[in-house]
Image (cartoon, rainbow, N blue to C red; front, top):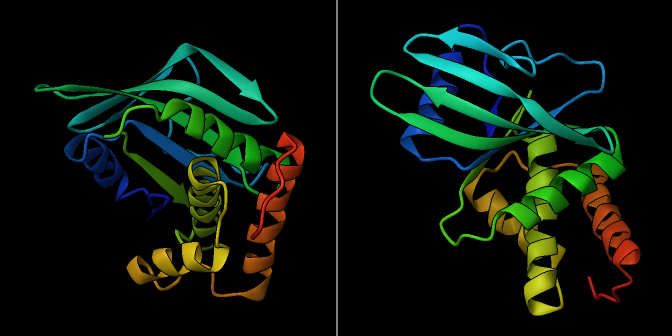
Length: 184
């Protein structure tokens, strides 16, 4: 989980992706918000020493843009999936988590979740991801424990009652959509 980069910290995000061999990036944003630090579809962006490119092909499902991003410098190249998810829409957040869960078949799969404040939206997204992953594996989920596990690493995550409620609502929506009975 990290904060969306400012103009003078963009290089740090790309270095993080290269150094930690990130396989996917989830960018949580508002519907009308433009991520100026990301290139548009079919274009490149220079952020020395890196060049960041998004290909012409991609998809859009429930307002979630899924693209292939390539980060390169003189020494190496990294290909990764990027999901741009409007955070206000429950449908979009659920679709973003679903796409990420379908992508991460490899046990060493790593991803970074980015939002403007790096705590509220990223916390909800990560709780939802972890809860749905636990639900798939164990058939049950404890959202309180899932939140506490994230709060151990980042205390700013899920600090408001509204954020807890949204976690419960999103897990509940997901299980209802899949026809799953769950104890939460």
